[in-house]
Length: 199
Image 1 (tube, rainbow, N blue to C red):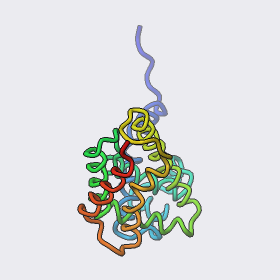
Image 2 (spheres, one colour; image 1 turned 45 degrees about the vertical axis):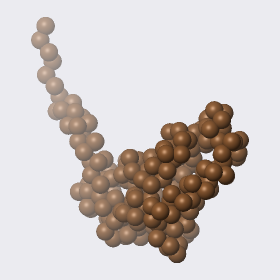
Image 3 (tube, rainbow, N blue to C red; image 1 turned 180 degrees about the vertical axis):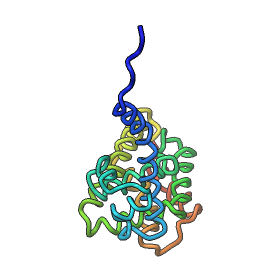
Image 4 (cartoon, helix red, strand yellow; image 1 turned 60 degrees about the vertical axis):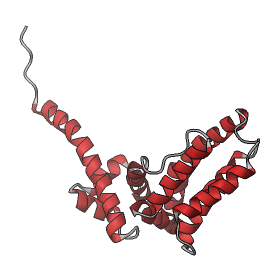
């Protein structure tokens, strides 16, 4: 039985499906590059579309607003360099926070600081940062802290407070800049927190 010939529309739909992932990647790359080179204020949907070589309509097809595409671009780049601890052994916690400090000293830190600063004036940026980055990561962290307490690795404590104790100093040094975010400082404060949590 012979196959019916493909219609022109079917061919175009197949081409569109193949092109979509490339266009999405180009948009996210463009957004992140703009964040690094021109800053958050200049990272508009129009600028992103122009740099990616697509229309604004294409950008809005996947993201509802500027904040959403910026956060997607940030999460795409930051997921591997800002891992959360998978367990609560001292060596593992220290290793993960040292990796975070290293990331904060580079391009990732520049973007995080910009998002926090802009979020004070732009509710959409603030919501996107909290929902897309902070809250999702804290859910993982809270589960890790609770598991560590159940296993007797640390004494029972409010997991939100534990995470604040561990991570707040990194964000404070990143955004305020009163002291450099050194590995020595990270080791010192991780040691203090873990000793306080010892069972």
